[in-house]
Length: 470
Image 1 (tube, rainbow, N blue to C red):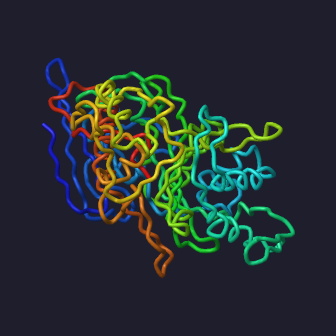
Image 2 (image 1 turned 30 degrees about the vertical axis):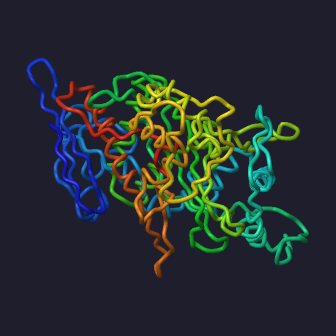
Image 3 (image 1 turned 60 degrees about the vertical axis):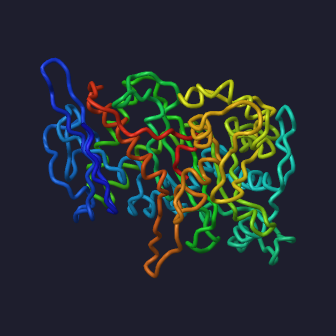
């Protein structure tokens, strides 16, 4: 039996309670909520104890056993979606800190191939919002330029470096070098998507790897020189290098041990040490963005884009805008072509198979035109409501539109407010993401449980190509 106790608490902990039967292991999950964390920053629930798994980080407060199913706890905020301020606002996330493992500066310099290339790499990436086509695509897909990128982000960033000697509009600059130590991006969360590497059975993973398990870093852009967030979210998605259930289990165990550490410098360093090899190791799968910061000045809506690491002039790395393989161009909304495709492929869409749209249907970017946006059925053939609902959740703008969100975080799954007097910034999760995190917890708790035979199923919430973590 699966028991839920969902309150409006700041910290939610998934408590896995599995009881061994004579020849099989029944698996049940209790979801407990706690009003606050204890003084150490760990879960304020009791329980735990017992051996645990050997970890280079040792045992922290509230350490729990993951070698058996008794009282294994998965913390939403410390293990699935890490938002601890010691991590997001610590030195390891600060671009001003040399060798900070999880800063935006670290992400860019690693992708660019070094600090010396980082500024040109950044300039080419920002310039992509001013172009009209995506290079290298079969159909030369058209995009609507968003030239406000210059005065909203690029120029203010350039002006943070006095040696550039830029005028007010950056029409004239002595140099155009982006100071990566002053990169106007703040870490919002570290996201555990090891669940992507597991086939979800009734109680979690059964061992196959249909997609690459991932570790992700979510950033918000801020007004250069401030901590005030812009409506611009970026997520860097790294392959975890896991090719088997055993690989994923080892990573999950390490994260589980890290989550048990008390909040503070030791916990921050442990998270950074875990993530560093992915950021530095060239395992980027893609970068995805969701913004209206560059669109609003021109009356354009929220837009989602995807970038892959490619080669520019002379083989220098660059972020290449890419087609959205699971999101149609907006011109196909309600069209016979899209309706016909859904009629033929609806089973794969509902089952979460590795489907992609034919390239003529694919979007170059995805506009979310209103907070209630959904894809419509179209005029040819019958499309079941279940197919359409699954399709909406799998598309960029469907997921960030009316099916998935709550009013406090419209268009975003992670939304940040302005900094308060103490410099603290609140990050709000959408209603969809809140539910989705519980589903992921079920998958990983079953993994740590040892592939227990379930007695009932976790709630079903289709995953999205964005991992529901924007």
